Length: 105
Image (cartoon, rainbow, N blue to C red; front, side):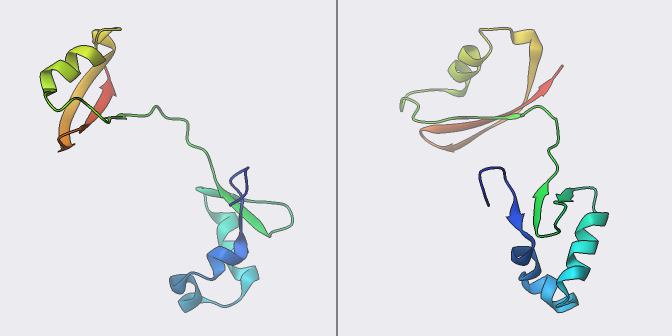
């Protein structure tokens, strides 16, 4: 992948499941062009995902103090404007990391 998120079509064509369907790179390019999830450049040699404009909904807190509790983390996170978000779920992944799944209200 380059800095603009383009990937050579040949990388996609080399996937095992794609090769099981076809070895024709032009057929791969044609299928990619019909997709609503990716875009193919004019030359038909590069492909990238179409950006989806949606808010991020997962917050990961790392390197927390060992004595941190879920309640303290919630208080810190919602100091700015607690009415803007609703915590859908909290999941401690280990002692020092907490994942919070948010949705706008």
